[in-house]
Amino acid sequence: MNTIQVTQNDYNTLMELLARNPGETNDEKTRQGALLSELLRADILPEAEIAPDVITLRRRARLVELESGDVLDYTLVLPQEADVSEGRISILAPLGTAMLGFRRGDVFEWTMPGGTMKLKVENVLRG
Image 1 (cartoon, helix red, strand yellow):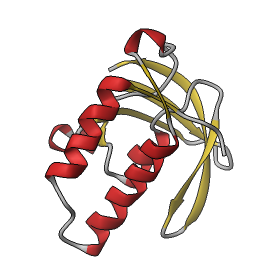
Image 2: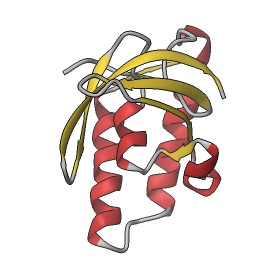
Image 3: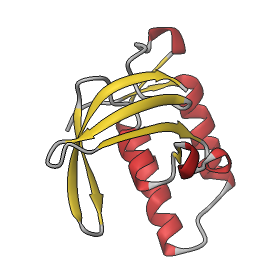
Image 4: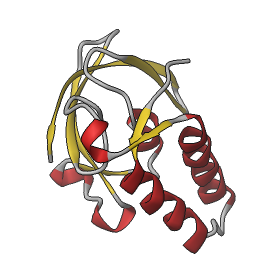
């Protein structure tokens, strides 16, 4: 499993989000547990030490699904800012949690009801 990088500010924001909003449904608890697991395995670094090609909150990522070649463009945001039709995906969405902390060139897996997809981070830009 690749190590991911998370800014200290994002880590603090996301830990606060999890503490303030305990999941009410099993689905919410599962999503929050997945995010917590990612945060606990991350290297937490000051913003100045995070490369510009690492997916953090408010950065836009271009992902390529390796099997189909489909391209996904999303900006990673907090739940209240999410709007998939505008390309903003919540950090609590399974894909949002899965993409956190990876950098350009990394390949990661996203498990969904229909199976597992392998995605490559093609590019990362400021949101």
